[in-house]
Image (cartoon, rainbow, N blue to C red; front, side):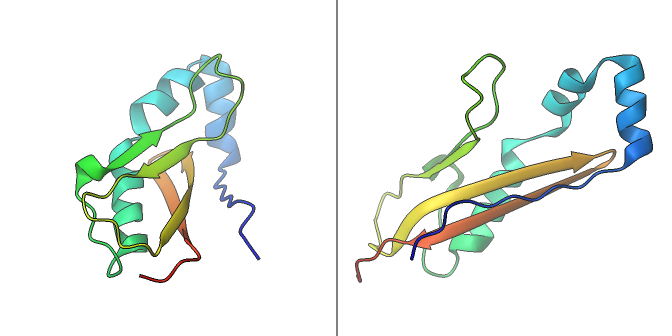
Length: 111
């Protein structure tokens, strides 16, 4: 059976109320959400089966006006192991904290 997805959320209500008052939520999210955090979580999820270089991981975060699609994470290894399937990424933030989770599916074929 495959994985349908993954989701994590961290919420601090006073922080959200402050964002609504200032109307800068999009700017704050763009500033603190970083693909570096996603790549770090991906490295930890893939290791020791694969040891990805930063350039082998590509994160496409949420973009304004792009069909409301989920963020995606792609792994393009220079030497495929045959064991790594689809990657799932979830990024949540609250105030000074960003929580990133990456889940890796097995490809189904054995190397």
